[in-house]
Image 1 (cartoon, each protein chain N blue to C red):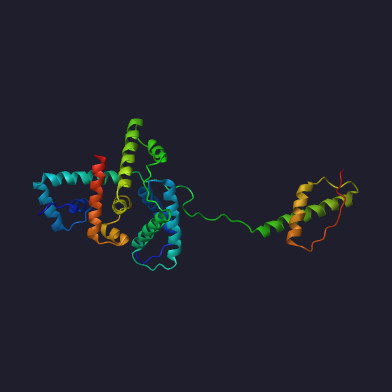
Image 2 (spheres, rainbow over the protein chains, first blue to last red):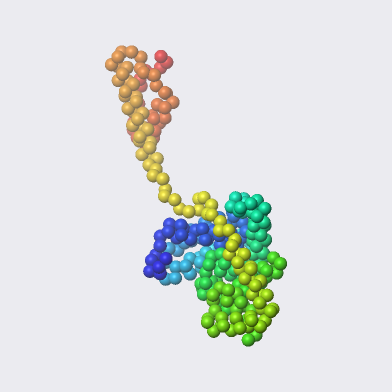
Length: 167
Length: 132
């Protein structure tokens, strides 16, 4: 999306909706929470687009997404630490070449998701924005409002902590 | 150089300058500990990146609203249909001198109610629609 273009809300929803949903899901580990959070983000985007001026659209979008997530999480007065739901198992079961391989893959996914959820929020957010959303360190720094050096540290330490848990 | 630490992930993510990259690679050649750390974070990074991308659940994306006529317009349609049906039934009865054609009174009542609702001054004309 070029910086000169102000997209419509429908374009944003269709282009980024799935990524926003996956971002929320990997941070919460819960499909219902991810749905509610994604809906909240899309509502804020719709309101925000009225005053949006062409610039770094993705930076703007992910700031909104992050803020919505934090606000909603605070509102619910809890930090998400829910284990992976059954639905994820069924989604993965149908795609692998054999049942054993599928089960092993799902178990591994479960473990990785659990390791993600065990991270302190700031580390989890940095890892998810980098490895799930695909933002650069500069974009993550802009989104989170921290220096790039902090992003680099959070990502590396987050991965190292996950590795210890998975070992 | 000292142990690169955070720079190992940055190397994996392509976030280092050419000079930094060269320094880290040089260090890795001589430091088994950092090579182990590098492999550990690489494996974790790959695992997270390979997590399945979930499909959006239904209902989250905007869809074009189905074309719906306003309630008032629908009521007028029912009222017009009701009035036409009543007139037709009465007309048939007068023309043939026989009993009025059978009518679904429930339907007629609905049509009539709709007509009265949208046109308060509407007057009813009683007709013999009693039992055949």
